[in-house]
Length: 277
Image 1 (cartoon, rainbow, N blue to C red):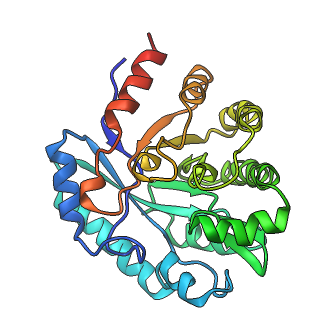
Image 2 (image 1 turned 120 degrees about the horizontal axis):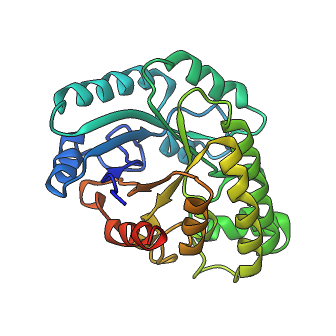
């Protein structure tokens, strides 16, 4: 099976918890590594007051005033690299229960320019409102485990949100994939153990849901770079099952600095090759 070398999840200088390096440094690295396609998928703005921590809120996403600048920048990169690598203009949209209208407005505003959506679950209700599941292990423990009672109950609620996100994303008028489906495991080595049967049960039920919705999977390798995780955010068996049911599996480095580009590609290629053997 011919595998397109495509990095479908990357960030830019518009990421306030990332790196100020220009996108040329990322893209040049991708070209050097032989990538054929590269998706810019920056975090768009969030509704004002989405979380109750003002300092963290400023780090999570660009302010509304910068979204037009980002889209112009992404289009500039697309033109600049035409003929050398296919740059696609994307966003990493968040599932925002209770504020889906906010996301709809962004999609409507940029329809025609927006080529790719990575649709991610980063937030769950918790103590003092919405909590970010991938901020720190201590914050996860204090804001989510303390709210739900056990780690396993947090995990169940996370997958409830993932399922709702898939159902909503099915209507998006643009190529869409679900971001880092097992992000809930980011702090697995620093928090109470997750019952693996929960993950297996929930992911097995999610595959046909993805297939029906026409939503792909961001096979996100960023977990390999995280000391408290140490593995990609998609199990190998899950990738095989997605492929068997026709769910597109797109590699995502989730690069937040240039040297992240290409992280885990060999592992991803091995999964796709073995699944098609």
